[in-house]
Image (cartoon, rainbow, N blue to C red; front, side, top):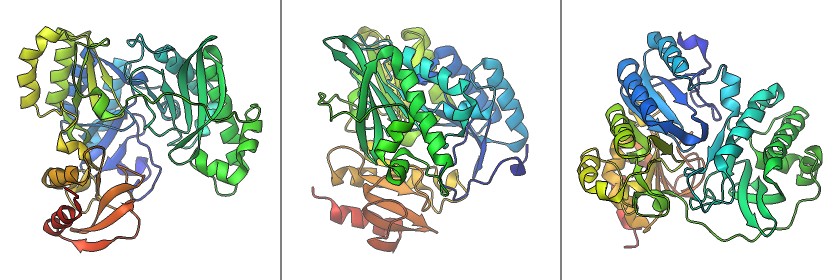
Amino acid sequence: MTRSDHPDPALVRGWCPGARRPMESGDGFLVRLRLSGGVMSATLAGDVADLARRLGSGLIDLTQRANLQIRGVAAGDVDELIGELDALGVIDPDAASEAVRNIVASPLAGLDASAPIDGRALTHALEAALVADPALHALPPKFGFVVDDGGRCGLGDVAADVRLTGLATPEGPRVLISIADRPGHARPIAVVAVGEAAPSAVALARAVVRLRADLAETPRRMPELIARVGLDALLAAAGFGAAMAEVATLPRPGGANAVLGDHTAGPVGFLGLGAPYGRLTADRLALIGDLAGERGSGELRLTPWRAVLIPGIAPEKMGRIRPWLTAAQFITSADDPRLAVVTCAGSSGCRNGGRDTRADAERLAGLARRLAPGGTTLHLSGCEKGCARPGPTPITLTARGDRYDLIRDGRAWDAPWLAGLTLDEAASALADLAPF
């Protein structure tokens, strides 16, 4: 395989790599695994770790869509890696089927007795329907779905064009269907029986494909489409009636804060481990795979918060496990300053990166946490694409060459508040902006 086999993703927003559609980056080819529901067996974790060592650089990304990316694959090794993954049964038969399965599911689906619906069953039904209809393979690359089982791990902070959320009602379990009518907002449109949820989501997806085909400049995401054609036109094309009124639902904890650390004594016993800046190594993946196989239930659950859950670990086993996790530098506490920073691969892994953003993140994490006591406060972007975080952040540092532009409450490509900062100057600016 040569570089000419694939479009150049440099500075192309919307490119989505996969296992069947690898992407060349600054450290070789990147091969993404889109695991169904984010569920990974302990055995598969060991197999993927071995492949990452043997055919890649040994570095593995955990993405914000709960996917894994094997990094640093040489051009001459790409076909062998794809063949090995195919033999493991973890990749789709073609790139189109792989791309359309852009679904984030509740990490504890099938394990959480508080969830009103079986999120795994709904995820599998939606995946099968999306793959089976060739017309849906024309959906934009980043068009995505969320299947939220309504249990203890809320997915309200995860971006989605179409959102399916389990509800407990007096009539029994139901699914709330919502769509993104504007960035960061989910507009409820219907409540349906569980068995109707996947067909309803597919009807919306088909409507998106048809409406996009009639537009000269095709929108990539649901909010853009609604802005062009209107909500009523979309609902009519999908066979829905008028959109329902807003639905009052109780807020549920979500995000890294809700899953990190020792939850082994809870109603759904699990251990939550954060991957620093979304990066695992083959050794780290092998370690947690071994823990899952020897001390847990035999599987890992990947989350969209760049954390991995190990279900089934007994509380009394944690004493022996903690030293291993500390040595491997996993994030095990919600107050870890590294959680304040989101960053891309930077110059060490991307041809467009002006600086080694991951190394800079280590320098700036403590200052970033001082900007606010929780949440992401700093986005380090190696270039103006802003791949790691397309939305606004309190502070964004965008590398331009070897220096940073500082943007306040904006995105990587927005106008800077300060420009041309060295790393030391950027650190000083963060210190000056910190309220405590």
